[in-house]
Image (cartoon, rainbow over all chains, first blue to last red; front, top):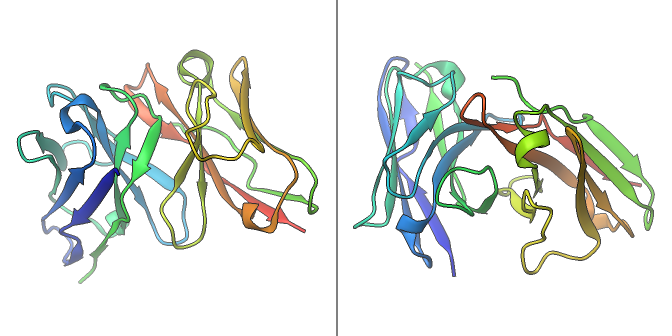
Length: 121
Length: 110
């Protein structure tokens, strides 16, 4: 059974940093691209970042480029999102998501339960 | 990054058929196809259709996806109360090298 478990969310002040983690199990982690997708309260889904199965290719939404860094440790079956220079508009539930292919294809077939990030003073 | 276009809301009666649309361009839906997701309030999204219009195992045959040019469609037949949810489409945009989502359609089953 595929499981994706996020951790690391919480309350952080504007300008602060936070690192999200996603522990994956139930599939061959290195064979699939992974993404972070967020959802602000009462809003729709917003793609944040994606990484290929090998970790060699990374992709970012314009809204987070230069502030967020996606990475993965295939030996630990774990996905990360380092978030710096956080802003109030980054407040959202952050979902870890598995793609159906080794490179991002926007066919996300499994989602974690999400972790809430709140940016506020 | 420009997203995909979905109608904000659709309302249909019980046991009727609803068709939801998702419009993109030749760099995303027209080229790569679109996936469809269902999200109930307070829960993570669930995949209904891969971008090649195939259903994951466990998804009811009442959900079917198709594409014509730059527009993808999700048809839900025999609407049930549990189908009331938000529906999103997603696609890979080869020009942006990014995933793009539609704004979502809230389906109400009357």
